[in-house]
Image (cartoon, rainbow, N blue to C red):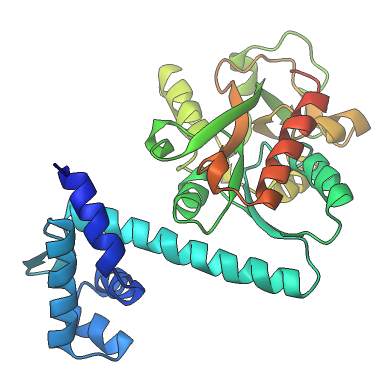
Length: 317
């Protein structure tokens, strides 16, 4: 006897149309069947019937009518997410075919966090381009809050950097590449540059460059400051841009916390200085996140292999 799961899968494979999924995503976006129907140039009764057919096929209620419009149920949200992934995959397939027609050897979209940008990702890109000189690469920089939803929806193939917390782990494969600590850096003119054996009390008179509120490091910094008698820096400059932060540190006596690999070359050249203070938080794994090796294109799998090879060349911190 067929199970409920088998029954639904067989029915959906026979009856499901991409137009139904397009309507489903549109209703989720507009919170209105009428507006979604208008976007797709179909009548509202036809749209209502298509949604009802989906609910019958999947045997769940997809939307609820409220004073805020038509709101997806938990089942609706799940199917909308999978619908977006299907359309993203169709778009990726079309783009990859187009790239192949134009002589490219595939296309990969990589999301990168700060920890991977200066060394890990450039080394991996160089390795990949040596093997696939016609590969079309797109790199997007951001935070986990922005990149992980794009990874889950299929807009991004790989995300490289600090591995996210449990909030992003559903349906995502994480591969640790190495562990990295956080270091405190200043400009070479800073009064604390070159001073040995610093304690947090020595740092208190100075302002800080801090990452955005939505980042894990910022939450750890805030907790650390609260535990230090509700300490509040005299100056706070909030920025995720390393290039901007580096320029500011060279002209103002501020302190910044960064993954150890990020300022490594600037410290070696004397552009920045590492403070002799052990940051008591922030250490964690740097790695790559993706939707599963079986969902990566051959070019995506090659980038993943290049990232692993690049990680082995980086000295531990």
